[in-house]
Amino acid sequence: MPIYGTRPEAIKMAPIVAALKSSEHFECIVTVTGQHRAMLDQVNELFGIVPDHDLNIIQQRQTLNSIMTKTIDGLDQLFEAAKPDAVIVQGDTTTSTAAAIAAFYHGIPVVHVEAGLRSGNLFSPFPEEANRKITSQIASLHLAPTSTSKANLMAENVPEKDIVVTGNTVIDALLATVAKQVPFTDPQLEELASSGKRILLVTTHRRENQGDAMRGVGRALARIADAEPELIIVLPAHKNPVVREAVLPALEGKSNVIVTEPLAYGEFTRLLSLCHVVLTDSGGVQEEAPSLGKPVLVMRDNTERPEAVHAGTVTLIGTDEERIVNEVDRLLNDQAHSDSMANAVNPYGDGLAAKRTIAAIGHLLGLEDRIADFSA
Ligand code: UD1
Ligand code: UDP
Image (cartoon, rainbow, N blue to C red; front, side, top):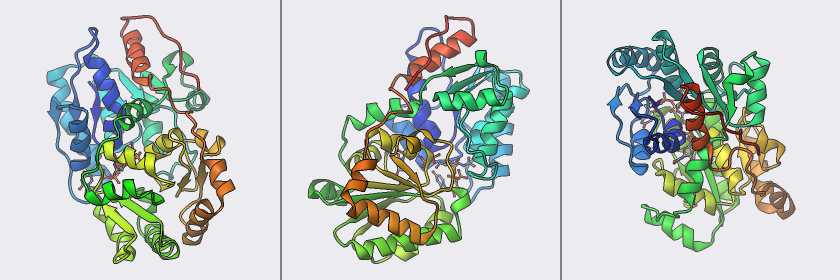
């Protein structure tokens, strides 16, 4: 039973659901919590996934405790009826940790996909660093995307025999989707795609950046838009009203800023492949953009994804307004600097992570032999 609730979990779980459904070994019961709604449904539709169960827990401006308690309560009843042999959770959202706890309390083995990421700071990202550490305490099988994440788990005394390095399933999803180069629904974006103009692609949503830091991001974008009239800034806005209230006011009336609703994954990956620079606080985008050779400026002070930083494609710049303006300016106007960051690197996967994932689950359940780990 794969259980997920938000956009990034859906994107990263989709290749696993497809692999489970095409395997003779498994019956796959897809359960969503509905922590996200529009942003989750958009991904399920794209990948043709119709959930078997939907807890539909979302509330506007929801709290972490409401996500946690509604998920545990809903799954408690569902597990009684469905009796899964194993539960699969992905990453570090509150849906994933709540589902892991609910399964653990029922004695159901927990398979943790994207295990072992660590920023080293319990409060950043909040609450994700705590969420993933809690899940690591109770999972039976830890699917680490990279050897770095495996080492993090071993440093916390997770037995090596319970860890498999699979690569990240986001690269499976990305490679399958970006190749399609789907048309944009919004005519403005289709026009932009054929204009040859340089694009700065921006996403922001992290809880610890909400408030002052995010207002500063809005001001920085407004200054960049004024200083670079030929540049087009595209900001697919997260559905969270708290994010929109902080970032969008400074951008009103700027003719070279396009604010959109969350883009369908096919459209987003096409925009990623077209853009010049990525400015983001997203986890998934930090993994995808390097694979497409795009320089990424990450608006955080730390990351649990150090691989692309070491490869030189990602720079951590924090959320200081002045620093954002200066780092974007440097990437736009210093060709040598831009070239040095625009390396296509694939430390996160080779597109075969879902295959390794279900082989590892088959091994956990005594159905097949263990297969070789992913190595970058
Ligand atoms: C959540 C995850 C975060 C992940 C992010 C991906 C937690 C604690 N946070 O954060 O780890 O990086 O998803 O985007 O698990 N909303 C809608 N419709 C949607 C989605 C969100 O209206 O489809 C609004 C609602 O008002 C909701 C708010 O956004 O209350 C916040 O959603 P929530 O899932 O709590 O937090 P995210 O910031 O999205
Ligand atoms: N994404 C998308 N449409 C958008 C913005 C992002 O499909 O408008 C995808 C992106 O390609 C990545 C994922 O959403 O795979 C990242 O989600 P998000 O930033 O919300 O969460 P995080 O990865 O930070 O947990």
